[in-house]
Figure 1 (cartoon, rainbow, N blue to C red):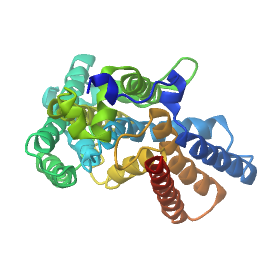
Figure 2 (cartoon, rainbow, N blue to C red):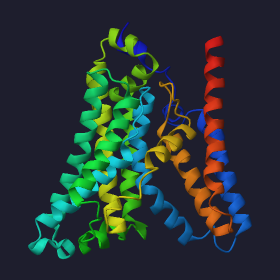
Figure 3 (cartoon, rainbow, N blue to C red):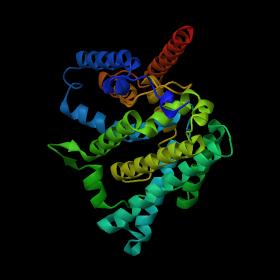
Figure 4 (cartoon, one colour):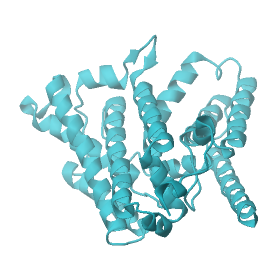
Length: 340
């Protein structure tokens, strides 16, 4: 078997990027947006609401791009939210330590750049640890990343003493946190857009993406075809950790604090968004377009419920229904494929 036999069937580029399963979930997103727009035409379909919706979803989308690669390989990463916190803490403390009087509020771009690099390095470190334990030690990813979930959070609390760091450079907040480019597009949204486009290119047009699908479909067949499965899995988890580090720095810029207690469900939100978007928990199937749609559904529900005056407690119920429906649809699709 050659590497080419492990590829998905040859289809047009857009078909590979979008996938059939994203059509129905895309319709769900459109219906939700239209419904809330009808319910509150004065408040929901406005530029301000759209802008805040995009900003609030940017960090989760960056996490979810990495999660898409992991789940396509039939893995899981429960640690991304805590790695986000850990990376933000490292970046924040680095900027404090390099600033006179350990007050980073007026830190220059050199110090900010150092904090950014350390945030990325912190996320990459956890990703590398996860990847090595999963790919080389053969420990189930559920157990590995559950352990990383607690360890990363504990490390962040040890570094800070459990107290959020609040001396974030004003230059960082005024630029990445609240700055805009290209006619008013928030900088955070542009960063998320770049990550999304890179993820789509990597997954759908490169050998790395083909190997990701092949491993998720059948890891042993991929290994026999010459794919370095161990190395590839390490790289996938490393990339996910790196993106968690980036998300941590984005979160730091937007909130101006490390928000240690504010990301307890980020891992589940990322997984839910990816699965709702059509990525199979069994591996081998998924698209970046589907992930984008899947991530926005909970965000639209949350924003719509708040604006329409619906108790926010309904939001997790609605997301759960859509999530279960997505998994059920995936199982039906797999059964239909197996019967052929």
